[in-house]
Length: 309
Image (cartoon, rainbow, N blue to C red; front, side, top):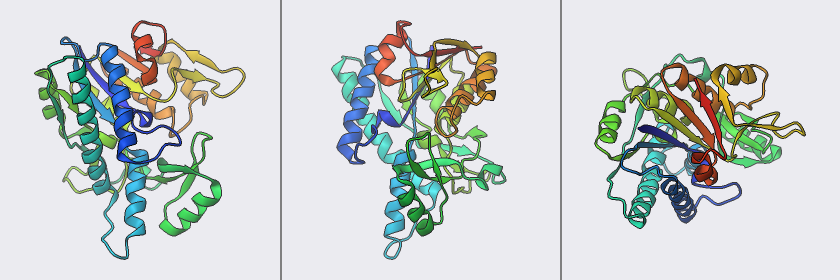
């Protein structure tokens, strides 16, 4: 069984925590221990791990912006490459430690991944991908004036800077990732949605949504299942309302109806359910959306949202 596991932001940094190395590493350990407890690294599973970089690439952007008078400011595609490198290092370091703890003999490889996008994608002219930390409206407006980036409220949790998020068309390194997975290597790839490049490999200043890129990678490597790990144990309809209801097992057609009814917030749950629908409509067999903390229960059938064709 070949699975792609897309780690959400809370796999590295929970709400309110700092951006320091130790925080990222300790959270990665906790996440991989849950994966190990749930049997993800058993011999019969071929595993590819992907991850987001929204908070981290926002941090890198601000670091470059605030020192622009002394050092050159790198474009967003280069900052995604940078976060792929150091997040990949943290994840690989933590995963190797957990595999040793469990006595599992498997190799791990991190692949810096390029993803093709269209330079004419309309999303580049209509920024909607949140990056960086959550802020008050006043602080966000102040930074927007300073940086030139627009800001939006994100899932009722605060305001964030937003950038263009073009749709991924092709994972350029998918054959390498798939080949490594086939021989039993646990692969870490498509970090931060991948480095956005054109068909001629020119970088595009944008940030790709990692769930959409993970869904595309899962299709390209022929994965059986896609796991999307996030901050909540279920996908909910009427989220945050008195009538909130968790979805436990749902078919694609019903999930599409909920999407049309506006149950899922853009920049939050909506890209995840869109990724689920896309994967299953293109040959995937199963999508699971849940929190890392609930993975063992989800594998037993006691938690998590399971989406079927």
